[in-house]
Amino acid sequence: MLGLKNETLAPSAAKVLDANNAIIKFVQDNATKQDVMEMAARDLAFSLCRTYTGALLVDHACSNVSTPQDVYVAQRWCEKDLSLVKTNAQLGQYSGDSTKNDFDLVYDCYHEGDRL
Image (cartoon, rainbow, N blue to C red; front, side, top):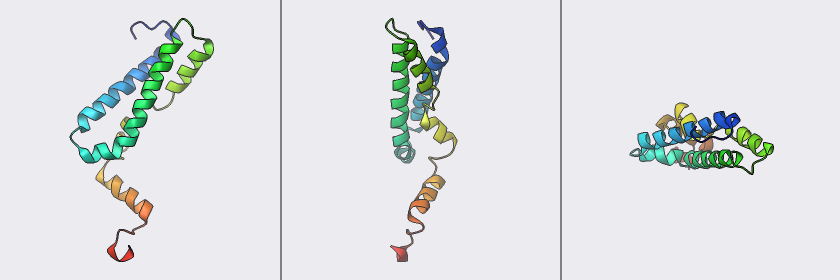
C-alpha cells in the first residue's frame, strides 16, 4: 500500500482494501435489486463499520505516536471477516430460497392461513 510506514501492517492494510473493494462491488452488482439490498442491509452496515474501523486502526498504527499494542490491535482486528456482505452473498444468503427458509425457521410454518 502506498505510504504504509509499517510493513508489518501490509497484510492488514491489504485486507481492508480488499474488503472495501468487495463492498463496492456488492453494491454496484445489487443496487437495482431492492429485495437483495433489503436482505443485506444489516450485513452491509456491519461490513462498512468493520472495514472503516480497520482502516482507522491501520492508519493509527502507522502514525508516529503508535505503540506496538496499536499495531497488534490493528492486525487482530483485520484478521476477522471485514466484508460480511461478500461472504454471505457467496453463501447464497440473499436468495429467495434463503428468505423462505428463514421465514419457516422463525415461524415454523405459521404462514399457513389456518394456523395464524
